[in-house]
Amino acid sequence: MPPLRVLIAEDQVLLRTGIGRLLEDLGMDVVAQAADAPDLLRKAAAHRPDVAIVDVQMPPDETDDGLRAAIRIRAEHPEIGVLVLSQFLEARYALDLVGDDARGVGYLLKQRVVDVDAFADAVRRVAAGGSALDPEVIGLMVGRRRASDPLERLTPRERDVLGLMAEGRSNRGIAAALDVSVAAVEKHATRIFHKLDLTGEPHEHRRVMAVLSVLAPQRG
Image 1 (cartoon, rainbow, N blue to C red):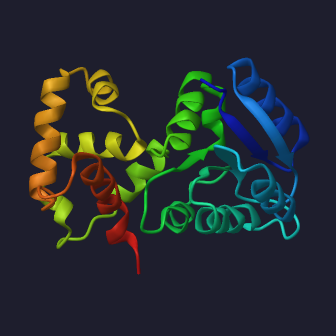
Image 2: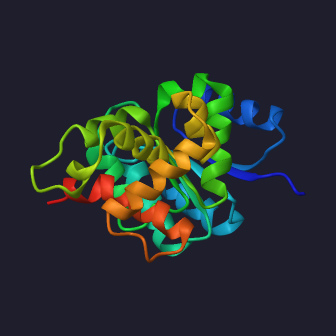
């Protein structure tokens, strides 16, 4: 199996180099690096990596240039997974990035990079078409529910399961995090899908739609 091909876009040279070395040590192929948003767009189109790791704030404007470039990559090259790194806990950034499709997208706080195993797992999940949303962002979103929100139908344990599902964890990963059996997670997931009226969809699509249910009530 060929190594995962990665593009890193980060204007801080030490962090960019460090992430590159970390991923190469894990057997991934860093095909290109970019220090600003225009260069990121050029290299994404030229190299077509499996996944692009993108800082939110980049030159030339030093605002949300990286985020806007990441959204454009998702639109123009949907086969490229996009994992955005942010220094700030901004739910709006995650909402804008995910849009209406949680597949092949991730949003993590930069502090997660130091957890090498979790960071590498997020990179691989996003490259494979899964999602990887920061647990602090998920917690912030789930905490801002409205009375008419469908998620109000869920029990606290079901919300825990859905939150971990939104982070991109598998049933086995959710079971380990909650210290329950995989069978218990599967039962909770079935109840979640039923309460969110997702029972008629294929399994993987139900997971994507359930993740979007965390995000959708935050829009507008």
